[in-house]
Image 1 (cartoon, rainbow, N blue to C red):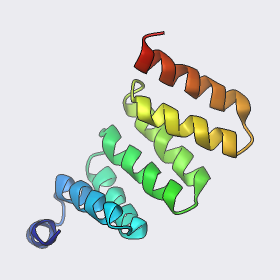
Image 2 (image 1 turned 45 degrees about the vertical axis):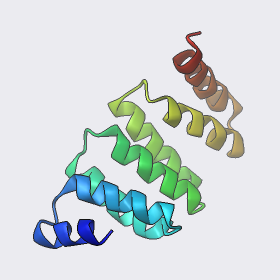
Image 3 (image 1 turned 180 degrees about the vertical axis):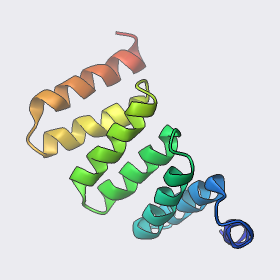
Length: 116
């Protein structure tokens, strides 16, 4: 983490450093810190589905399901074949009482991962 922080002191716009630092923070239980860095990575790499997806995971872990849905949908807008985003959306939509959306994403996830 220290190396990524040092890199960001030199160049605060290094999207990959934000993404990787966010991931390390998240792995260490700091979802709020991770969210901040994922947002910075996503702002710097608006076409990168991974930044949006990781943001969705952090938001989901922070108990903000509607914001997580928006982040996962942003990831899918950049890469419709991002299977993990479909899977996580299926669970969130089920939790939010939207079974049709949950089924649609689960069906897409299965098609992407099982070939059918």
